[in-house]
Image (cartoon, rainbow, N blue to C red):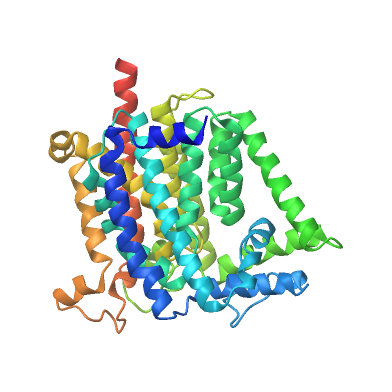
Length: 424
């Protein structure tokens, strides 16, 4: 297909509203972040870790790839493949790199919105332009954190959304490759492999595993040819150590940390019981397994419909975020696709969703949690501190409640679409 034909398809009249709102959103984000950073040099903490890692590679110190950068909590966590891809950052100054990195994050956000619009249309949902804007506004707190720290969660979400779209379009190798990239970036995306196992999609499972071995095996051999296996082992060991060490920090907003708030004496006096940390971790793992099985059983296996594939992808993305052992505010940017998908569905049938007893509490909690993510909301209520902590929304675990309410609504959406398909 020629470039002229591709451009012509993109500029079809029915796509003009999408192009307009994506253009406006892109302009706002470019002015707010890359252009502002160009004029006022920022310090993007996570980006500096990536840049330091790139410098180590260029200086021949790949054996120090996963060593701490400035503090014991600041180190590169991603696979050798991603270390290889970010190597060009070492040729840039801190200022130039921050501008480029924030510009790439803008592209990832816009790309996720575009891909999600395609997914909506595969569900016969025609999302109005305000749906994408509303999804971004609901996640504006995590998005701001992403840009101000220079993180990779928008890229993570884009890879997952792209994989789901490729799967729906029966481009199996492309879907597997994107999933392998997402898993290499952050291991919680392994939940998709558990899903393929449950669905008995052995070919897809094999393709993803093949991509994972190929990408990271080649990258490890290039970075540290004398000991590529040792480099991969160090990566896994680093991830395992960091996850358990930071499981119950206040900034961690995972399902595990929510249970920690309720089941351990952390000083905020919100706990119902006091249990050992190891017991809480076992409870969290059991709860995540139960949620996984309840959400996807029963399912049409091996050859799921496009509707089921998309709904399952959105639910898996939500569980992926909630189940991450270390899940920070910015991690919730990976939920842009599920949030936009849900809003498109609700906008298509507002009366059914807002008048249903099963839908209304979930949607109400979702929008309320979106407001509660902001410090201004609590200041408006006159709550500046809670048990001596100024980050009230972190103490009250607003973000995992947001994720749980999103998961409930997505499950309802999936159930209704599958029932409609089976009755057709």
